Image 1 (cartoon, each protein chain N blue to C red):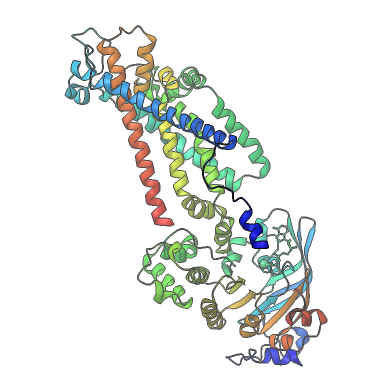
Image 2: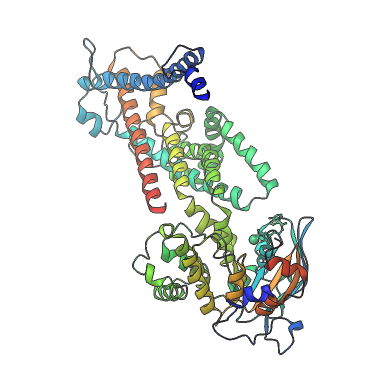
Length: 323
Length: 281
Ligand SMILES: Nc1ncnc2c1ncn2[C@@H]1O[C@H](COP(=O)(O)OP(=O)(O)OP(=O)(O)O)[C@@H](O)[C@H]1O
Ligand SMILES: [Mg+2]
C-alpha cells in the first residue's frame, strides 16, 4: 500500500521552468555583469583613445608619433611643446625625470614616516593615544590636495626651504617642496594600511619574542614588521602610485618648467602637472601639443601599470618564501 | 585500590632520581628552590585568577602543573617570567622569588629576567624567518653578532632539542615549512639558545601526535639535567612520566602539591583524587 502511494505521488521535475525567482536571479546577474563590463569598457576606451592619439592615427587625423619621431620623444632632452613649431621640442625625459624626482622625495619622506606611525599605533600607543591619533590621520587624508599645494607654496617654501637651502640656490618653485608635500599626503595612506597589516600579526609571535627577552623595539622591528612585510610593501607601492599620479599639489609647488635635472631645489614639471597645465591654457584641437598630452598620458599609464605588476611580483615572491 | 593500579604502571621514573623532595611538607632534605611563590595572588583587572599560591619549584627537576581548564595554570606559569605584564590591568600580590630575589621588585629588569626564564607555548610559534634565524633570534637581540659563535649556539640548541639531524641541511629554509612537531621542537631550541636557567612549558605537546609527544618527553628528560622545568599539562600520564613534583590547581587555588608518585597514587585531597581519576574536570 505504501509503495502504491509513493508511485502515485508526483515527483517535482528537474527541468527548468519559468519562475519569478529565476527571473530575478537572472536580472541581478545581468546587472552585476553590466557593472563589471562597464569598468572593463572604460579601461578599453581609455586605452583606445591613448593609442589612436599617440600611435595609430585614424585618417584624416595623424597620430602624435607621425608628427614627432619616436627617437625625439624618448631620447630628446628638451620638452617645449608650447613653443612655436620650429622651436618646439618633444623629448619626454624631463617630465619623467620630474615625476621620478617628486615621487622619490615623497617616498623618502612619506614611507618611513608612515611606517613609523603605523608601528607606533599598532605596537606602542595606548588605546587613548590611538583614539586621538587615528582621527587626526584621517583628517590629514581628507584635506584637499589643492590645500596641500598652497601649504607648500605659502608656508614650506618661504619659511623652511628658503631659509635652509636658499644659499644653495633654491628657487621659489622647487621639486623639494612638491616632494615634501606629496610625502605628507601619502603618510596617512601608508600609516593606516600598514597599521592594519601590523595589527594582523598574531599576538603569539609577539609573546614568543618577549619570552626570549626581546624589548618592545626588538619585537616591533624584528618580528612584527618582518612578519607583515608583504602587506607593508603593498602599502608602499600603493602610496608610490599615488605619488606618481598626484597632480595639483605638485603643479602648485614645483612650478611648471620641464627640467632635466635631479636637483631638488630647482623648479620642475611632472607628467601630470604638464597635462593640467596645458589643459588650463588654450589648446588647438588636433595640434601636436594636444596630441602630446596623450603621449605623456600613455607613458604615465605604462609606468603605473609596470609598477602594479612589479608589486604583484614582489608579493607573490614573498608569499612563496613565507607560506 | 584501583587508583594505585592505574598509575603504578607509568610512574616508573627512568632516571631513578626520586630523592628530590617536593615541598616542605613532604619532609626529608629539600633541594634548593629555584623559584618560590609565597601567598601569591593574581588579578586580571578585578577578576582574581589565582589566590594564595605557595609553591617551591626545585632546581634541575621537572615540576608539573595539572588541573581543570581555566583553573589558572597558564596564569601561574606566565607570572613566573612576568609575561602577564603585557596584559593591561594585571596585578600580582604576594611574592615570587627567583634564587631568593623578588622578580616583581620595582627595579627588576624584565628583559634580563625573561632571558633567564625561557618559555615554550602551547601553539608553536615559529617566526616567519629561516630556521637559523629563528634559533639565532635570542642571541642576536642579546647583541651577539659573531657568525661562528651564532652558528655554534644554533647547532647546539638544535641538537639539544633533537631537531638538528632533521634540519641541518636546510637551515636557510623558512621555519614555516616544518611539521607541527618539528616547529614545536624548533621553539624549544629557540628558547634554549638564550641559555635560560628555567624553562616554562605551557602544554608543549598538546597539539602533537604521540610520536612527536614522545620525542618532546624524551627531550624534557634530557633537559632536566641542566634546566629547571615547569610544565603545564592536561595529560596525566605525561605528568606522571616526566615530572618529579606535581601541583594540582583548581579554581585559582593550589589544592595539593607533592611527589608525583605520591600525588597520583595516594592524593591527600578528595578533589585531587576526583580529578586524576577523571570524575571531575
Ligand atoms: N587575558 C585575560 N584577561 C582576563 N582574564 C583572563 C585572561 N586570561 C585568563 N583569564 C582568566 O583567568 C582564569 C585562568 O586562566 P588560565 O588561562 O590561567 O587557565 P588554565 O588553567 O591555563 O586553563 P587551560 O587549561 O584551559 O589552559 C580563567 O578564569 C580565565 O578566564
Ligand atoms: Mg592554559
